[in-house]
Image 1 (cartoon, rainbow, N blue to C red):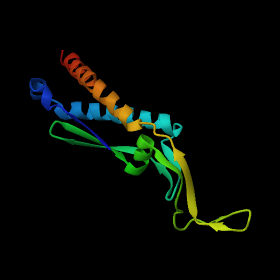
Image 2 (image 1 turned 90 degrees about the vertical axis):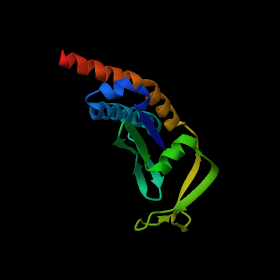
Image 3 (image 1 turned 180 degrees about the horizontal axis):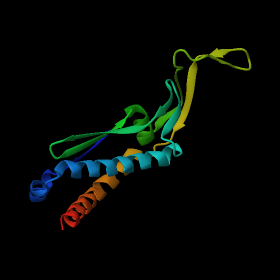
Image 4 (image 1 turned 180 degrees about the vertical axis):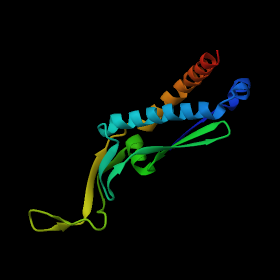
Length: 152
């Protein structure tokens, strides 16, 4: 799940902007915060999903810059996809992570799996992508205005 923003369509402004890398970094930081904010809304505020085979999984965003383009990648992709599209299975299991003790049930049985139920689709990444694409031009304008103010 990625978001890509490009300054190529801005033509003259991108050529005249002396600190293009600084502008990309500023926009990238703000976009990362927007994506993580949407993730916090759907994970209870801590960006952690529990009860996975690997235990608790922390969500984060990786940012890459290259020649007028910012690419934001939501990692790890599995939990982000679960928040985005949900799970339509009424009951599903996955193996418990290795090295973790097996669960002893009250009836004496032992279970070495983690159970999951239905997960509602929350469209987390779609909401974040729409906000980033709507706000990025304003962020660039604010950055350019700040540069002009410093130069004056």
